Image (cartoon, rainbow, N blue to C red; front, side):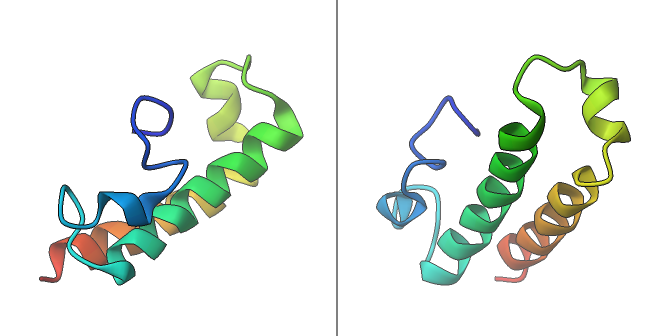
Length: 74
């Protein structure tokens, strides 16, 4: 989802296709922002295990949990 679709570039463009509204789009954008922060700081060449060990990964987890809650609430 992160780099295989346009969701990371502009989630609002996906409203009506895979997202229902701006609230869902913002929740996806928050996940993307959290991932961008991790990738900006550590690059994109670490192993999954190494990313999971970074304290900033918790931001990705929390943003993802919030997005999941929003996506499932409707």
